[in-house]
Length: 127
Figure: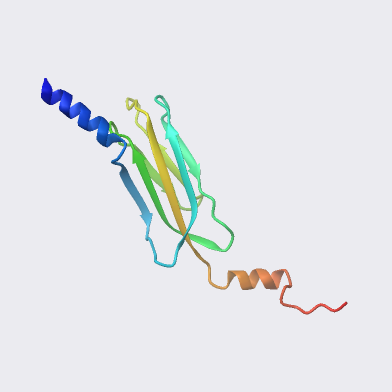
């Protein structure tokens, strides 16, 4: 009996500290954090889709998803074309959990120069 109590106590203590980690892409040294999201799953919630914000002139390079749930492991996917992270639990997985998403991107080379030319910032204007 004492072993069961010890295991349950250990599970409750490590549940808030340990997390399952999913990584998509490569964490390049020159990339910068462009989006950071945190959220919770209620007891009966099964699926969440989180749309990441990607600024103009940036290319998504790396996404890190951490899910804190000591009882069950979700399925985590990343849709590269729509920039959506989906976290889904199976039918009989009922437990509350939390998630944290960090998205990093790199600047597209020459993109700001093209925008400046389109907006005619490089031209001289006379009054």
